[in-house]
Length: 548
Image (cartoon, rainbow, N blue to C red):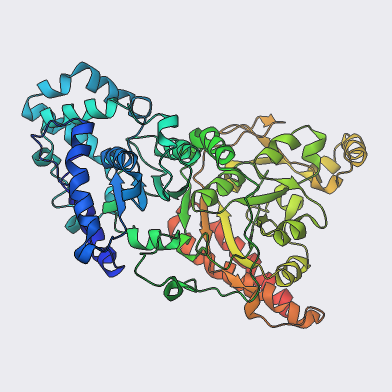
């Protein structure tokens, strides 16, 4: 909202290298122009730049962040023929609904009456909500971290009042903005509801694509890990003067036989709904994601299906929905394989709504063949229904079917580890205890009647902090950790799928990757070292078994 251009400074060099000639709109802090006056002032300047030398018309990409996003949309509305593309970063559209406190300040006009000392205090309180300090180097924020100099109280009050005026940005009015639009929305924006607003704009703008920045805050462009030029290139916004062929094959993973591009089976609005439902749980468990840099580039061409393979934790519900959502935030819609027993209880419809399918012998094969990304837990129900002493233990079946499937369909295998959930439950009675009880014959009969293996009986856990058994598993709150290892490209293995010896090489490599994954976690989870060491031991044993 400072309109000083400071937020783009760290992005200038990569954008120049990408071939962009950059102009910055600077609005003085004493300027009290309305939206229409700003548009009338800026359009002639932009038109002059677009004409270029010798009358050769140049392509124009308008980048707008927050307040600037509202201005960018109004410029595109005023002269659609002038603008080739839009890039909007956490746009402050629909401000009255996305920031109730800011909207109230704008309506009352109290902010303009703040004395300088009180205003500085308010800025100090607000700044951590805007900027994620752990993602920004001090050198990159020397200018930005003194916003009082750029936005005095009177100026801030005026611009908040402008944001409160959303005239011209209704759904019907935005539908005329038909040029390609890239929406960058931060998942951890504490100023605006950027994920929700980005989803709305994606539905309304005819030619918009949304990209979620999963770890970014409101001021994403000043963060060290954000390279705007790379994000634009990865999402098809190559500079018009540069050959697209130059950038093809930028992903480290090649493909001799790509999968045809198709519409995702899990829609954005459904996943956004899932995010809203999970938000309280996400805050409580604070998922820690590491190894995200190992994930293949979303939307890469040629497109290939991904098979995410990892360990299942106890009961499966503590962390699996969050894993699916965290992958979605990073550009991957995943289809999970849910146990058929969920359809017996009536919960199957809920699983289906969020992209899961009933597990069957060929379910994963069909999904991968259609180009879907699949989330696979080789341990299945047995790993969900752990027994005493099996915390974090891998209970994979001695089979390589998923490797054969991935190889046949040219899929990329992404190994991952999930930690934290097994510590949230304290088992009081496992299946062995139940077998010794007088009720086992009844339990066994019920499970056999519904077609579920009695060996996969859920354990009975205690209420957190007590020794009171609970038939409904109630977890304690433990932080969740996900780690992604380097992907395995099945295309790089020219193995004969009919040769079992060659086929077994891939599981060994997968186990090796997951074995190397664990030492990285041990220093980060001091309370879980025993469980992690056990998990690593299980991986190493699996590797020995495969080599044998």
